[in-house]
Amino acid sequence: MLRYFEHPKNVCMTYGTHMKLSLYFAFLLAKGSVQAVVHAFLPDTFITSTSDLTEKLHGILKVSGCDDGYKDE
Image (cartoon, rainbow, N blue to C red):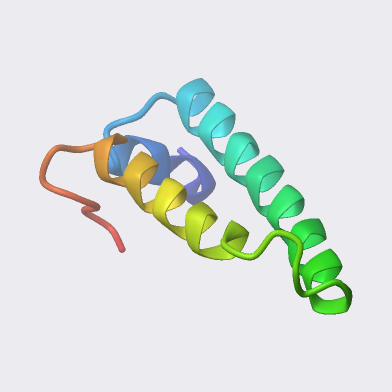
């Protein structure tokens, strides 16, 4: 099988589950990027958004995939 398709299996996910999670991360990161740009120009907006996003992403990664963490990275 192509090397491109080994990673989902190595993290105990199906291709579809991995794709859905990755696209969700892309959405969250895109949203967070917009908030960070707005915050750069208007510092009193989205004050904790980057920290909140970091915690959210960490929490999702912690409960996704293999129980013992990532095997290939």
